[in-house]
Structure formats: C-alpha cells, structure tokens
Image (cartoon, rainbow, N blue to C red; front, top):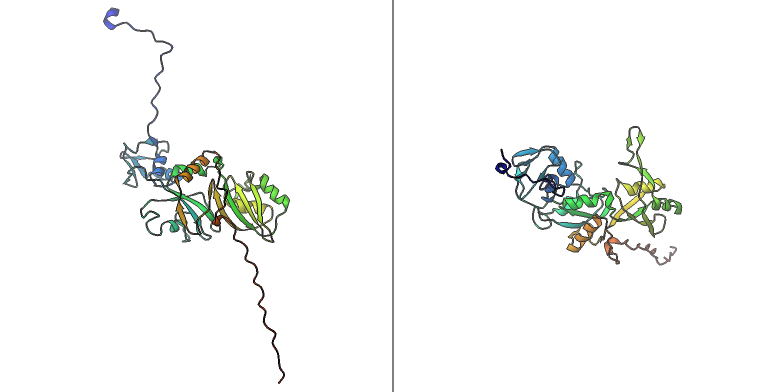
Amino acid sequence: MSNSAVGKLEPVSKNTPKIQPEAPSGERLQKILAQAGIASRRKAEEIILEGRVQVNGQTVTELGTRADIARDHIRVDGKLLHGREQQRYYMLNKPRGYVTTLSDPEKRPTVMELMTKSKGPHGDHVRLYPVGRLDYLSEGLLLMTNDGDLANRLSKAAAGVEKTYLVKVSGAPTAEGIEQLRRGIMIDRGRLNEVRSGRRDRVITAPAKVEQVRGGDNPWYELTLTEGRNRQIRKMFEEIGHHVEKIRRIGYGALRLDVPPGGFRELTPGEVTALGRAARGQKVTPKQKMPEHAQLKKPVPPKAAKRHPARNWRSS
C-alpha cells in the first residue's frame, strides 16, 4: 500500500502536549452533605460509611467519591437533596449547665434548645451545628452554623484561631506557675484521667497569653489559646495546682461576646468574612472596646452592717 493511500504520517513533536487524564468532576460527597445542612463534615463522613447515601441510585460508601449537586441525584436516608442550603451564622451566649451537642442521652438541656425554641431563628427548618465545644459547666461565646466547610476549617488546630476566656481559679497561682502556662505546659491528652496502653498520654500545650484581670483569694485571668484540646484550661491550671471554678469564652477570632446569657444573634457579612480569614491563618483584629457581656461584672461591695439604735432598758 502506497503512502498516498493512507496519508503522510507527521512526526510527533517534542513540544506536543501530552493528554492529561481528566480530573474527577464535582465535589467530595461529604462536603456536599455538609453544605446542604445534613451534618458537619465529620458526621457526613460517618453517614457515607454507614451506607446511607445514594448517588444516581447507587449506594456509596467510599469517602473520596465526587458528585455534582446540580447534575446528580443524591439521596440521604432516601430523601433527595435539593441543593446547597442557605448558609447561616450565629453567635450564641451559652449559659452554664447546657451541653454543646445536638442531643444528650442523659436528657440534659442542649444548646440546640436555645436556638430552636420555635422552628429556628428564621422560623424555618435550617439545621445548625456548634463550632467546637464548651463543656457543661463552661459558658460564653459559641458559634452556630450550617456551613460545614467553615466549621471544619475553624476547628483544625493548624488554623491557630485565637479563643479568649475569662477564668476564675481557686487560690492564687504563683508567678512561676503562670509563666509555665504562657510557655506551654504538659497535660494529659484526651479525657481527664484517661490511661492508654497502661500509661498516661501526655502532650505539651501551645504558648498562651495569660493576664490577671482581678486579684483576691480566687483571682480571675484572661487567657487566650490557639488550640482547643479536651478540657484544656482546667487541665492547665490543675498542673500548677489550682482548680478552675468558672470559664467564660468571650472571644473567637475577631468576635467578642455581645449577647446576654441564653441569647443569640446573626453575624454580619463582615464578621463572617473575618472568620474565614481567621480559618485561613490570616490575622484579624477584634474591636478595641470590650462589650458589656465580655467583661467581668464589678464586684458587689459588702453590705454595711445595719446599725440598730441603742435600746434603753428600764428596770421594772
């Protein structure tokens, strides 16, 4: 067969671009579920692994699976997703005696009860989730959102988002003890008194800002951390020999607590932007003036003893 019959073959140039394999389209399934308000990113991963998600009729249990919410039919527990839920962001002032969880097996009151007294802050059925935790006895600033992506980025220790607390301790720590907290101190990892493989699992905390804001036998300190380990503040002070009596979170990134206990408000677009910057490790600056609810109340002076006029006793 002649060359004219098949055409002339051109030599392959060294500069001819190689054909790259097509990258998987769409977003990871757990991210789609989080954006739709189904659950946080971590909880969405559990839902996928449990075989509760179907894409175009096929059950998916692999976390790396990608899909397109605009093109694919995605169902969770048989219910079809209808796209990305409108994202909402709130600041809640958690009172002492509430659990930072969606439900509690011990039937203790949860922060969700504060946010869903009717059908939610907007009278709708948007499901909100807490960002991070405050333990049962702690109080103060708690972020609530259905933006699973932002919540996941804020919760990562690598982001280094500053969280500020007012802490009341029993007894007066020494200057050396406070300096230990500033430099970083060795504490138990995980839950209190937890032992793993027959030994205590210990970790050193990141440097912290610690300033005394009120003296006395039971002083108050302002403490700023860039991490959030389990019951970290209580463990830190216990390591220097002092029990923590009260904890109130008053700052998160550029936010400062400005709603009363049990109250909440929606964040402004500027505040949401600042949270995104903090989650990316960028510097954010809080307002200089500290709101009323982020301050310690002025101590109540002891009541002056009532003076009774001297009685004149007459002998009978």
